[in-house]
Length: 111
Length: 114
Image (tube, rainbow over all chains, first blue to last red; front, side, top):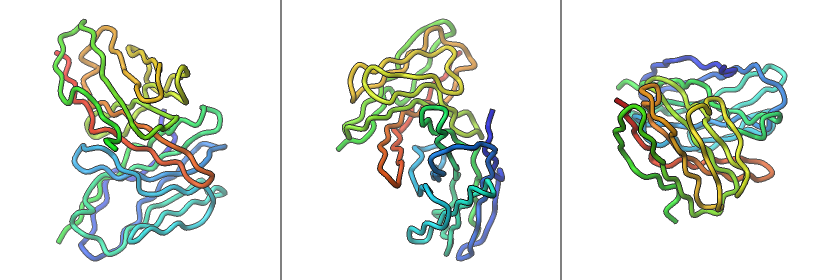
């Protein structure tokens, strides 16, 4: 079963900052990834944390703490187009590097 | 580059029929994967390949077969379709560097089994 947990829904207003958390119950993985998916379309890559700490890409940042089994995606200056589903994913050492996804967080950005 | 392409975009099957979902990538990526996504759910890994001639099972492999005869192609075969296989199927290819692992997804195949 899934060993990655995310909130199912998050709502925020335009211009605000939102944090989407991902907790996991797996050890020995290469890194934590984040993907965005609009309305059932193709998921697109946002970020990858191989090491602990913060990775920043424009308005999006991602954080990983292996000691806390925890990561998050931070979205700043929210825009309406950021309304989408966000998935965290891990590649486990003992499963040939397969990418396993969480169930996703649906973000709704309100005006 | 076309990226990852999938055909068909939509398909309706009757229970018991078989078919092959096609997936191709032109980025020379080693890794390819098939996922299914059910309404309101995440992406569940069906099968996975780390290179031509090498495949492995994912989380939900039952009822599906794959082969990887070339780097470019990774077809998914439904052996005997069942209504439980109604889903959206995504193919993906990926590459790895020392500091990153990025997966590219195709547009998906929307399959309905009646």
